[in-house]
Amino acid sequence: MFDPWVILNIEIMTEQEVSNMKFIKGELFCGPGGLSLGAKMAKLTADSGEVFEVVHGWANDNHPSTCETFRRNILNENDDPNSVICKDVRELDIESLPKINAFAFGFPCNDFSTVGESRGLEGKYGPLYTYGVKVLRHHQPEWFIAENVSGLQSSNEGSAFLQILKDLADSGYVLTPHLYKFEEYGVPQARHRVIIVGIRKDLDVTFRIPAPTTAGREQWKSSKEALENPPILATAENNERTAHKEKVIKMLEYIKPGQNAWSEDIPEELRLNVKGARLSNIYKRLDPDLPAYTVTGSGGGGTHMYHYSELRALTNRERARLQTFPDWFVFEGKKEDARRQVGMAVPPDGAKVIVEAILKSFAGIDYPWIEPKWKDLFSIKEAHEKRKKSAKIIEDEEGQLVFNQLN
Image (cartoon, rainbow, N blue to C red; front, side, top):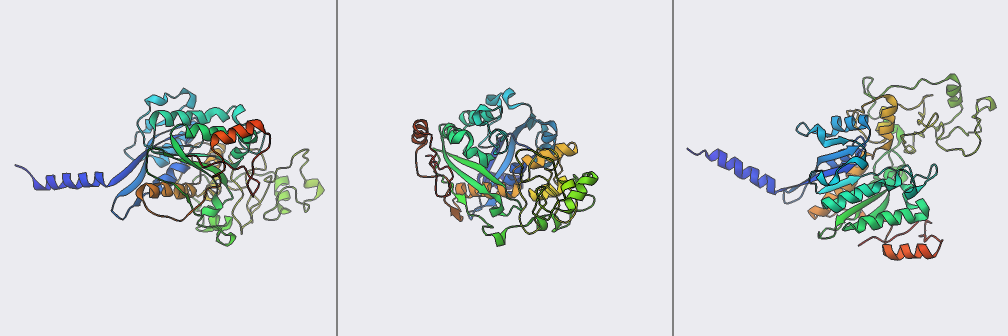
């Protein structure tokens, strides 16, 4: 005896499956899950009722505590914990990874940062982007996001950026690289990152850079708003304070909000005895009326970011607020482990804006957009040949490197 309700339920389920565009995402160098959280938040419904969303497929990172953070906060109840693969990317069997149709990789930035040697492709970490290229060439996802520090554009006099763009384009993708300034997208932090979005060439989909949502200074979200609205609960995780030496506390008394350890207001006996380069973020206190300076995940004493009204370093929970992580998002591991994870992550709110624009592009939904930073000067081969023949760097009106938007 047949049950008409069973038939009806099957028809409803079939209709739901047809009307749901689910992108299964793989991710290398996943970190604690900032980009993945932003991608989950980007779910949208088209006028037709079709749902576009990104779901977890697999992820990889090399730090055990980071992998545990990702598992705890990103995986759903039915996701396999083993889908977060905790090992060196060089040990991964990329061809045996499960099928995906979306991909993300924030390849290590150490060798592209403007702080330090900036060895680019010649460094220990620079070549690791090639593992993302291998994923693209074998799995051919419909789209991908690649993220790195702003120093990528000038590393190795620009040749590293050119080589990376060429390898990504040769994998079968139309690229839209752009320098995103996250304070212009609602993030309470001046965090500037090169992000490359690639759409597979055989698809009739055009991605455009989403227009800033907080473009002017009067619209920026301040560090004070981020830390105090709403207040952080006393029971919040990752909120342990740093025990400072008395000299540090005394020195902070003389550093005004927005200033650093090189302030002329600091008495001679409290000043740092530093020879050589003076980094601007050393014992720098936040300006309560502006977005924070860049949250980082490494560095010694004096680089932990300092409160605008209290004589202390920020807690990891406060730093996570500046990165737009919700308070329920718990970072596993010891205090310094959590600090590294927070600083190396992609701000979820920033990632959401970009992934949402990708989903709208696939859904055919219009959205406000701007021109990409790099476009319409040279093809990648022409730019590469010119660089071989000349030591001069092609610059745009702002004095930044300019490259063609690849097709």
